[in-house]
Image 1 (tube, helix red, strand yellow):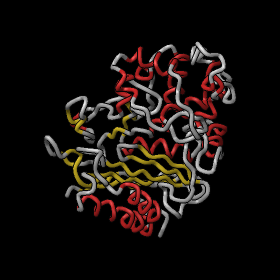
Image 2: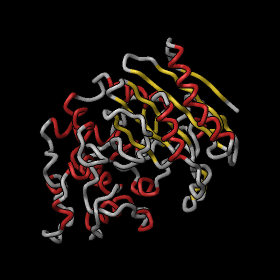
Image 3: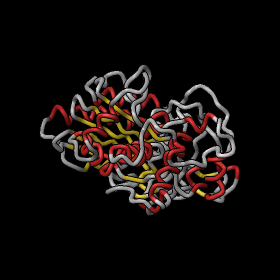
Image 4: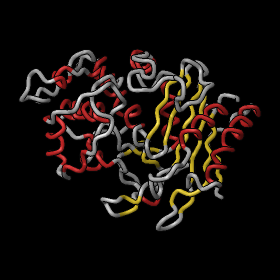
Length: 345
């Protein structure tokens, strides 16, 4: 089993022991063949950092070891690392009003029915997943023409239901960003240490895709994002180091404005803030997070949690869907256990 350490190791032996305890169930999950490999990293306000890797970045059709520098398809971490900060910056600069409907930027949203409920949805509601959009929609099954799919998303009469976590919210936010910037998501700057693709030999492999007919590595796994050729809900790639740099920037107030960070922490519901998830019963960060924690996960097996009260953040990156998503990896309980151990259980 490959194990590697990197980064600044905290001088406090108790902190390192806590990291070792948190890493133990990650190693066990690899040894039990629940996940191929993983990288765990912790950073503190002020710079103390430990990052460790274990297992394999790829199993089929060839084997590669996991490294601390391995690139990951971050999946829905795109929502909070890429899209949310940019939407909040647009609001702070006065380009958009968070409480204005999306049609203030996307006037063609359901343009053939001026009474459609979709035309009343606001930017803030999308950030907090407080809209009636359905949870999961296989947009990619309607074709592979990205421009046509964008038009389909804007003109479709969406089935309305109770508010749930929905990728459609952030797909629409991404479309608004594209309209305002005059360029596609993939033409935008992904941010320092991030990208929209990666070297296949340096990335953690994801799924043996049934409709692309290959094992994916370094190209986006999310089906809808792939068909759209870039979107606001998924598609970002990064390493544990780049994620911890981003988290440290939020902890120290350098990665976003004070107002934006306040909104990222501000509750919009019992489970959500602007973009992020907040502690609640059964959430991914475990039972011992302080109330000042925000977090998010990604379908590929990624996650990031930032505890502002305690001044620390941790990321657990796995390739839990390699080579298939149709397997119970135990990722939900692993995330919770790691969170509790990071917080001293």
